[in-house]
Length: 87
Image 1: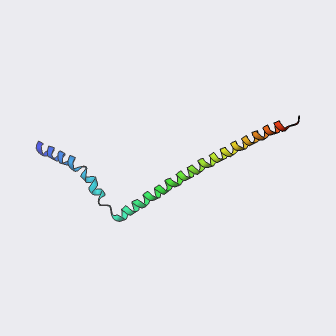
Image 2 (image 1 turned 60 degrees about the vertical axis):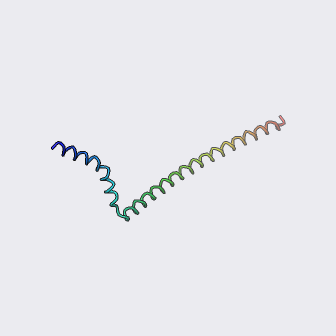
């Protein structure tokens, strides 16, 4: 009896990795197409989020650059005004 129990446990150990692959192989082509569609949808959503994030970061950088350029222009115009002031 001990030999049977050991053999049975050993056979389960070797067959366990095979079991899930047999179940996965039974998916229908229709389900495969649905899964591919869901994966594509999720990838498109991720791409959209990344694009939105990049656009926001770019917009903030442009705004910051514009404000900095305006500040430097104001500084330069004040310097010119000080140099050309007759007083």
